[in-house]
Length: 160
Ligand SMILES: [Zn+2]
Image (cartoon, rainbow, N blue to C red; front, side):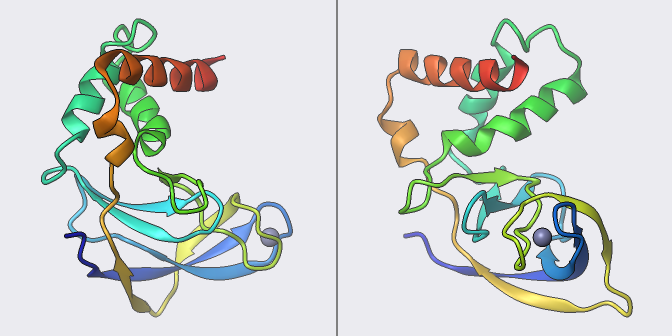
């Protein structure tokens, strides 16, 4: 089952690139490497990705790294591309909107997703965020060729 878990997040203050207003949003700064709080591109809702217990991410990583436009890149550039596209390989929400790693939170004033700056609130504030794991039902139903083609389209989309 996809049970909810509570994450202790640090509150950050963001300034919106679009309207300039400031707002607060939770950021997961916890155990770090391999664990990501993914944000929805449209709704701003969160899901949880734990690389160590996820059963499809190694396969996604291998297929992305094997792509001809990626395989010759350095490690940082490869992980950059990986972070940009991996959210599109998992399931979107019920409205069909995808989640991503490292997505800026949505501005509550103008709905933009681009932060001009952000910083930890001081004195520190924390909040509990209830999240479920991201699922990969669509991915698991795809053939190997379909997976490679989907990754190819996503990579074309960010490289072009
Ligand atoms: Zn704004």
